[in-house]
Image 1 (cartoon, rainbow, N blue to C red):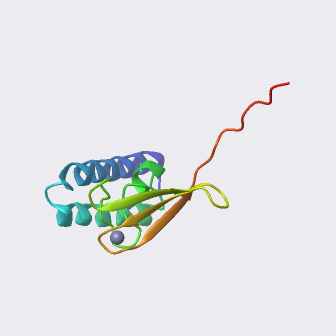
Image 2: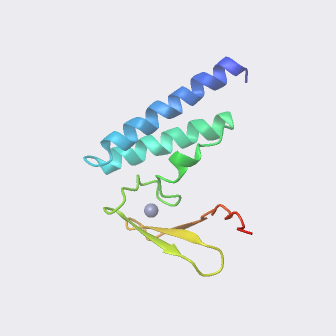
Image 3: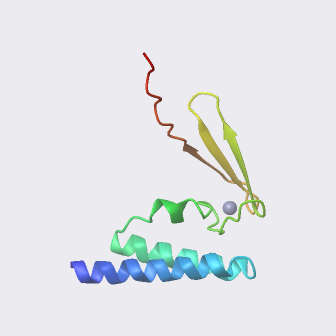
Amino acid sequence: MNLVARQVTRQRIDVLFQQALNISKYNPELAQHYVVTARKIAMAARIRLPTNYKRRICKNCHLVLLYGRNCRVRIKSRREKHVVVTCLGCGAKTRYIVKTKRRKQIE
Ligand SMILES: [Zn+2]
């Protein structure tokens, strides 16, 4: 796939995600459909979904996660600090590590 086609594909994914985020409040099923379509396009073109999009959707059921509405967010400090996002639609949990900046040592 050439560069232009890749860029057009990225734009299509962007549009689909923006639509999904806009509509998720009113029509979660349609938003889910948009996400599934965007993912299919991304996979076919072998483009990675940007992290900021990835973290807004449930990996299991592709629901658009709205914080405080259909998902639970918990910060865990055991082991490595991480965030656990539980999808209240299907119960799947996504974890991701919180990178903390190292403090400069004061001498
Ligand atoms: Zn889910």
